[in-house]
Length: 168
Picture 1: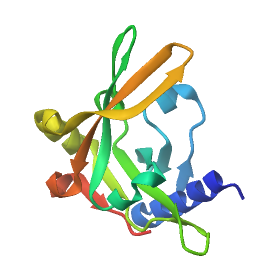
Picture 2: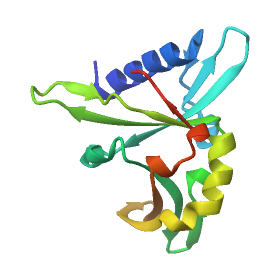
Picture 3: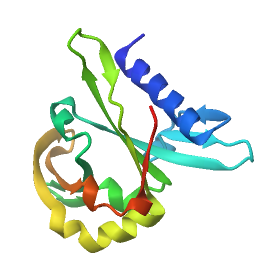
Picture 4: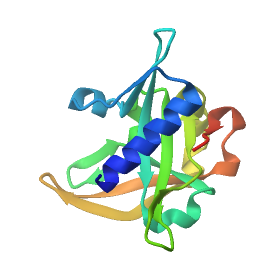
C-alpha cells in the first residue's frame, strides 16, 4: 500500500471512530476539492459532515501539539490571492502530521485537531494579523512564482469551542 493511501485509510478510520459515520466519501472532482471537501462523512441520520484535510510537513513534526498553520494568502507577480481560510466551505479542518518512527515504520501522529469553521473563522478574523507571517515557502507554477502567507496559531490560543481532539 502506498504511503499516502495508508495515511488516507488511517484518517478515515479515525474519522469513522470519532464521528460514528456510516460511510466516508473521498471526493475526486475539483469543484468539491476547491471548496475544501476532502472528506464527506455520511451519517446514519442522513446528514453529512464535510472535512478539509491539512497535512503538515514532517519537518514541522515538533509543532504537532503546539500550533496549526492557517494559509491566509499568496502573493503572485500579478497580485494577491486569498488563502483557504477565507474561502473554504467545509465544516471542519482536520490537521495531521505524519512521521517515521525509529524502526523506519510510517506512523500517523496521535494528535489531530478539527477546527469548527462556524466558530473558528469569526475568531480568526479578529486575531489573524497577530499571527500572520510570510512563510519561507515559495513555489513555482505555470502562472509564475508565489509566496504563501500563513498564520501559525498556537493551539493554546484557540478557543476550546473551536477544537475537537480526535482519538486515533
